[in-house]
Image (cartoon, rainbow over all chains, first blue to last red):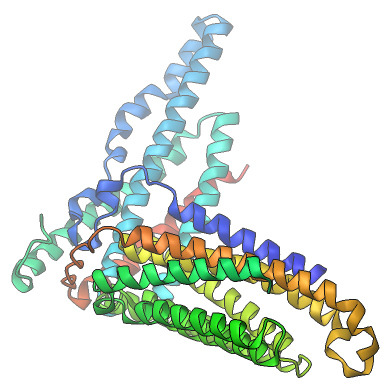
Length: 185
Length: 280
């Protein structure tokens, strides 16, 4: 019966995949549209711009001052709140990055020729990113907030965002020249 | 097959006739000709099987041959309907279509080769051969549909509601059929194999009740799953078909050539940073 069991497991597995694919989406009106109808400006990262405020909230100077002058229970509560701020900011960075990654997919969908290697690489990198992000998220939840490393991540997303804005401007310019209708909505 | 099963067979034919009616009214054949042909083939094979059962009896060789031949014919036409679903709306996205078509063709060839290899090794009996082939083609259909839906979702090019309902119906039918065929094939090729060997003809009268009840259960499950799938398709076709999606206006090739490597480079850098954050 091993063979039959294997086929039953495969059938159940595929049914779960189908149910997952059929689940309602969080923001259907925007996502159900074809790539063509999506405004490229929706893909520009936004969260990374709030890093100066986050840095101020998480600064080491504040932490040292608190440790010296505040009672332990207050320090503990503040630490918990700082971790929460870091987690939320990191989640925002993930959202920024997902937007950019989605832009890559939309451009691929609208391109007449695509590279199999590029697509495979992006898929693998996205999967790796999800795993690593979860691990970093867990680490921040458990230990001190690595503000310098978050700064580096922010810098990366920020540079990418600037480059993307330039690329989108180029796309819009090309669209105006070559396409009769609005990709530059 | 018994008389209860024949009654359900008649109900199945009636529901398939309703499906064909919807197909005709909604002019589905204009956008999905292979699916429409599948509906017609289902109806014709149902009528032919029912007619043969009535005239030659459930246990005749003619009924046996007609049943398995029509089953294999249905599987073949269904494969064309699945291929049509794969192509629908995607061919306009030339780059993605080339990629997805390559992946799906590779999968189809692998599964077809597996089905041929698997069926080749079976004893020369139509039932075991047919069940093996059907099981493997069901597996191929389910896998191809799942991969198609996954890739479409990944690139944000969803199927229209009608095509999605057709995919769900085929997926459901193939999944149930996959399990049903696996169990029956395993029993036929296993301890009921005496039934197919003339050397054990003396055992046949004792095996007859088991074989009959097994075939009844198999037939009922098959009929019910097909009726549910037909119900899903009829439900999707109850409303007039929506306007077909506009063909997309594609971007110049240079946009992808510039953007894609850049996105990948940054993704890699981002992952490297995350790895650094994880170091003690």
